[in-house]
Image (cartoon, rainbow, N blue to C red; front, side, top):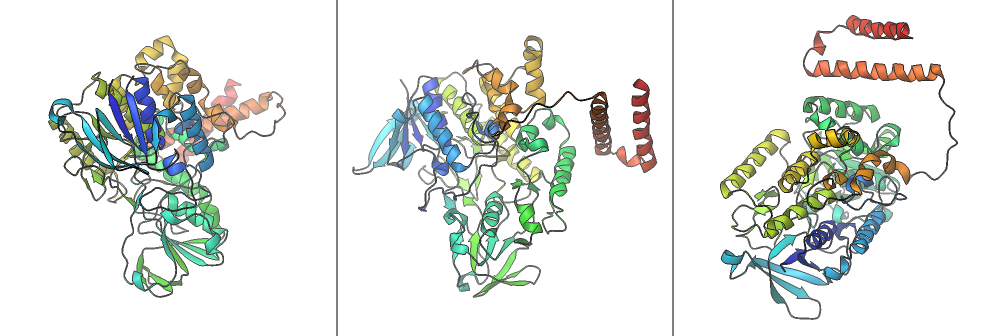
Length: 556
C-alpha cells in the first residue's frame, strides 16, 4: 500500500483524497484548520496566510460547471451557489465518499523535503505540527500540495500611501459593508473581488470608486433566458471557432449591458487577452452613480487620492483588491521555485527537476472556468502516475513545454502578475484527460451514441464528459451530460407555470424567421471575421435579408 500526503482539505484536497481512494492508495490529509472547505468555509476572523471570503460572496461559475465529474450538485441548489451552498456541496461530497476519515484536522505542515532514500524510492519527508504535540516527520510515497493560491495578500506601493489617515485593508480582510456606512470608499483593482466588493459597498457607502490601471471587460454570469453564460461558452463547438470571432462576440455582448467607453471601463486589450471580470450588478451601480470608475492612483494625501487623470477625490477608506502572492514556503526551494507568481511547473503541477513523479501541486492554475473539476482531473492524473499506469515525458520535453507556455502566455495575455498560470478550461482538461485515457472518443461516440456525441460537442462541456471512458468510468455520466442545461436552472424554479398552448402556425413561422435571421447574422459575422464582410455594402446586406424573406414566403 502506498501512502500519499495531502496538504489542505479544501476543494482540491477533498478531490485528492477521493482520487487516492479510487486507486487503492492510502491518503493522509493534513488540514491546519478544524473543518473542511478551505477558501469556501466562511469565518468572521481573518488569519494571516489563510484564504478568506466575504459574507455575500457568490461563486461566478454555474453549479453544473463547478461540480466534480461523478458527483453532480443537487437539483434544488440555485444555478450560482452562495458560499454556504458551496461548502454544503463539499460536505455532501465528503460524506458520500467517506473522505473525512482520512483528514487530520489542526495539523499544520511545516516542511516538505526529499526523504533520505528519495533517489531510489521517490519518497518524501513531511514535517507536521499537531495541536498539543511536538512536531513530527513522517515519510510518504507521494505528496499532493492542495493549499490554493489566495492566502498571501499582494499590496502595491503608491506615493504617499503611508500618509493616508483613513482605514486601509486588503480584500482578504473584507467581510461586509457595515464598517463603511456613509463613507467614500476607494477600491483599488477591477478583478472579480474588486467588482464584487464595490457592488456590496454601494448599498451602504455614500460613494464607491473603482481604480483601474487598464480597464476591464465586464461579463455577466447569465446569458439568454437566464441560462448560465459558462454553459454556453464552455462548449467544444464554441472553442472550435476562430478566437478573434469569439473575442468580437464577447466584447459586443459586454457592451450590450453597459457601454464600456461611456463609463470608463474600456481596456486597451481584447476580451480574451485578460481574465474576465464577471459581475451582473456592477453595470447597474455604474448607471445609478453609486460606483464610478477612476484611473490608476498616483498619490495619496492624508484624506484623499490623486489619480492619473489629475483628478482628486476625498476618500475615507481604501480597500486593496490587488490579488495575491503565490507562495509555497513549506516546500524546499530546491524542489519548487515561484518567481513573481511564475511557476516552473510542467502542466502547472510537476517540478521539472525531479526524477520521480511523486510530488505535485494541485489547483495552482487560473482557468477561465471552475477550478474544482480541474483539480479533480489533476488528482486523477497524479494517482495514475504514482501507480505506474502512465509516466511523465523526459525532462527535456517538460522544460520545452514550460518554455512554450511562458511564450504563449506572453503572446496571448497582457503582461500582469495575474496572468502567469492562465489557461482555457476545455483545452487544459482535454490535455490532461488524454494522458490518462478519459478524454471522450468522438469517433466511437458518433457510431455508438450519436445523440450523446452531439451533446458533447455542441452542448456544455460539463465535467461528467470525463467519466464516459477510461479509468473511473461512471454510468451516471450520460444522464448528466444530456440534461445539463435543464439541470442548471432547475433549482431556481419555485413556482410552477401553467403549460402554454401549442404555438400557432403564425407563431411557428415567426420563430423560423427569427432563426433564419440569426443564421444570416452569424453568416455575416463569420464573413467579417475572414475579411470578406468588409466587401459587403449595406445594400448587399439588405438584399440578402430580403431574398431570404422571399424564399421563405414562397416555401410556405
